[in-house]
Length: 398
Image (cartoon, rainbow, N blue to C red; front, side):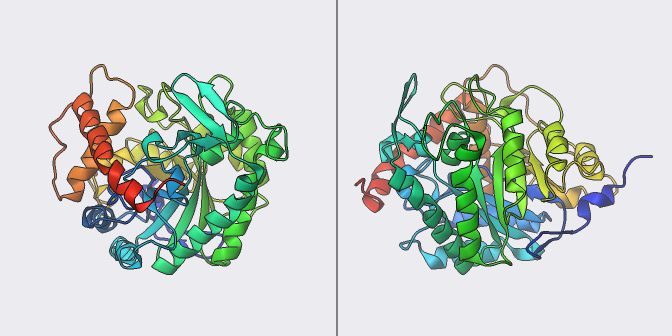
C-alpha cells in the first residue's frame, strides 16, 4: 500500500515548541534580490509572500550575512545595527501570511567571499587555481559566536520565525569542517571534534541570544564532493556531536561552490540526493531532520517522510518553478513541477538561470524567463557588478 499524501501536511513540532504547519520547506537559495546595501527590496518581499500564499510551511531566506565584508554576493541581506528594521519587518510580516514561517539563513562566505567587495579569508590561507584567501586570526574566529548571536537576535526582533546557521556549500563554517580548506593545527582544526568546535560554539551562543522558544537550525553538508574535502563519514561524526546541542533542525545538503566544482543540484542523477545519509544520521540523533536536494515529485517527498528518513522535505528549484506547489500537492490530481531540460551548460549557468527565474517571480511573472543559461549567467553577473559601488559605499572595506 502506498503511503498517504497526507503525511506531507501533518504538522511537526520542533524541540523549541514551535509548530510548522506541514513538512514542505522552500530551502535556502541565494535570490540575489537585496538592494545592494544589505536591505530587502519590494521584489524580494513579494517573492517570499508568494511562497507563503502557495501553502508551504517554512521558507528560508538564503545568505543573510553577519558581516558585510565577507558576503557571498552584493545582492545578499546583511544583519547588523545599520539594518533597516522597517524593511526587514515588512519582509517578515508579509512572508509569514497563511501560517507560513520565514527563517533567515545566517551566513559568512569566508574564503568564498565576493572579491570585489571583500578580502576573502577562511580557516587557512590558500593559493589555489581560482581561489586565493587569507587565514582568519584566532581572535577573528573567537568573535564569530557573538557575531552570529547578534544577527540571530536581530532576526527575532524583526519578527522572523527562526534562523538557520549556514555550515554547507563551501562557505565559512563548511570550510572549517572540510580538510580541504581547514589546515589549522590549533583548537579549531585537525580532527572532527576540533573543526566542529566553532560551529557548536556558534549554536550555543545563538541559543543564548534568542531564548529557548525560537527555532535554531543548521544546514550541513553530507559531503563536499571534492577530493580531500569533507566525507560522509566525517559529516556523520558532526551530526553525532550536534545531537547534544540545542538545535531544532538539521538540514542536510551537499556540494560546494568551490571554483570549478559541480553543484549537486546540477547533477543529472534522478531522485533525492541525500536520503541515504539522512537514514544514517537518524541513527545518531533525535533532532528533526530535513533533506534538501533532488526532490522533483510528490511521490519522492511522500516516500521520504513516510519512511521516517526525514521530518521535512527541502526544495528550492521546484518552488522556483511552481510557487504554489504545496497547495497543488494537496489536490486530488496534483501536478509535479516541469523542470526545464538544458543542453550543455557551463559551471554556474543553471544556478544563474534559476536565480533569474526568482527575479521573474518577484515581478509576478508566471512563466520562466525566455533566456538560455549562458545568457542568464551574463545577466546575473552584470547585476552583481552594477551593485559593487553601492555595496562599497554602504560597507567600505577596512
